[in-house]
Amino acid sequence: MTSSPRASAFRWLSRLFCQPFSEGNHVRFGSWAERLAARHLSRHGYEIIARNYKVAGAEIDLIALHGQTLVFVEVKARATGRFGSGEEAVDKRKRKQIRRAALAFLRHHNLEDKQTRFDVVTLTGFGFRPRFEIIKNAF
Image (cartoon, rainbow, N blue to C red; front, side, top):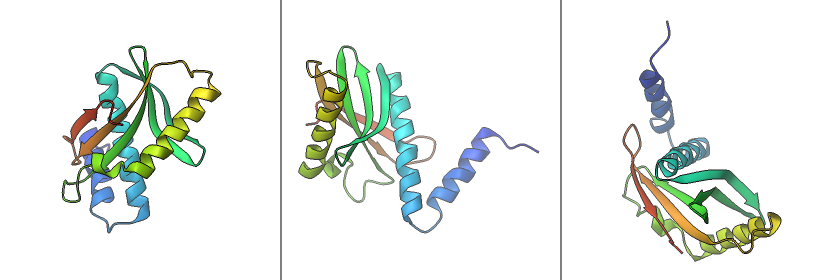
């Protein structure tokens, strides 16, 4: 007997959120949030060209084209708003890491002259209707 996609998603979310907090659950939540954010961005005209770009001791969650602009995207997810917004988690240190990785990406692909910007996508909640916010030119 096969279960519906909705039932499968519910089981996956139950395993993810109903177990005690662990690093594995944290990583799965982050991966889930990045996939949803990529889909959300695509629906808003972004073309995702890279995911989880790692270089120079830093990682960029998503790299996309939005019109003629190359956009480096940090995805921040929160199950609830209790511990602050995702945007607040992109502190000075994290911004510096993302800028360093972005510069390495631009140099590696010979795109130093390309118009760029840094966006943050926040996702709050989980389940079938999380809330998204795209913060353009976040830093």
